[in-house]
View: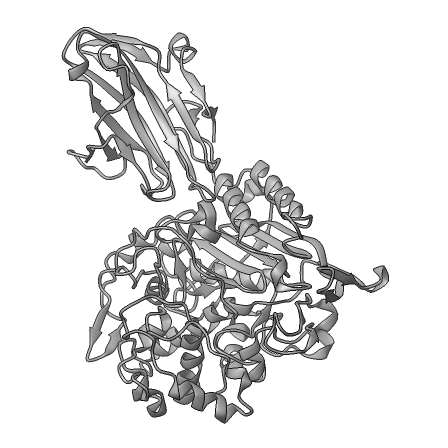
Length: 610
């Protein structure tokens, strides 16, 4: 199978306003997209559209320093160090033989680093569970331009091609697939829509071995006869069959094969010279090898797969399939990501309208918490996006060890391309290298203190509890209150920040309710937090916090922040700044005073300037 299994993370994204279905066709313009510029966050997509027709070119990528990209160098250095650690047993075998890492922000690629080997093993020895290595002079080191079999990251290209056709009016998002492919409507699939294919809510089984059929016609007949395992629209189930079906729709309505569409509509306009289906033999020395494919761990006996598609069903389709089969390199994927973050334009080329990109980054799966999905793109998935995950963060993974993550909020992008099935798929599990890389890139985006030069930072360790405790304070009046600035971005529900209090009457640490107001919102009343806790997404902006301590009158009270994280994923963490406790007209604690700040007990927290 070409797709990684999706994991946890609760969706907080609402279906974008302004998306209008008229008679089964999606109307894209001139409908206002619910203040799309604001919804796009701080990314380049929020700027006025550029590219053809605007009189100015859109952003293009260039290499530069972390400072040029607005990133901290330390976390990027640790990103590489952690990635290199996965070349060693992790824990029993290397997670990949090698990888190419690319990270950037805005128009700047601040990190582009190959590590390990593109080709290391000639075979897998199942008797000893070891890889049979090529002689040293036949092994090939990773390079910046090494080409990878993207596996399911290919689905993004198919999805972009579909959205292009929606723009042009030849494809309707809410139309039944059977209206384009009459044979598709058998076996209970007559009501499946194009949107359900793009959001994996069609009811299809996750996978079936189409490649076992002797001909393409027989493979299609197997697909036509495949019945949904659940009613269309009833559940989220990731399935390669959705994008295979979408490929057939695109080929039918355009009269062009998928590889031709890819070349004419995406790679040629954007100048992606290292991106295509079925790479020629001349590319082979620059392609990362994948698996020694043999039964029983593979469905086919092919030996070492190198320069040909790895996925069995894509192989059965001749290497050109909607769900897998695209080969590309890190720079080309970064250009694609920059294009989407810029609202569909790159340089003087435009492949999508800004409102179309907004659709791809809009959660259509609000009925399925934890499975947020735009058109083709997965959203808000900590299991591989790590601390880059926000309700707007979009991306995808591929079974061969590939991934792309785009965060419009910070205008940052991350490409991790690894050959993790080389020499065999059983050597790797999970997405630890992807998560580690995303955590470091998220940390590389500085959070400026709310006041002064530094703020208290919780850190980003998983499976820990960190406490920030104020000294004992006597509150003489009934007008005690805590004020501070608070910034949080955590894995929803799993990672929780709690304000607690303890005194001689109630020695146990008990939650203290508080109210927060985003500094950029202009709100007056604020948002109450009756449980004294916050979790999830706060917009990555500072909030003013107020907590009433009137019930602690006459008591010697201690206040603390307790930040508890689960495993194995975390968010960007928590910052607390400008801590101030008032008792009527008197200030009894102010962390801007050196003597007060020195009395704070920090366990797991640290002062951070960024």
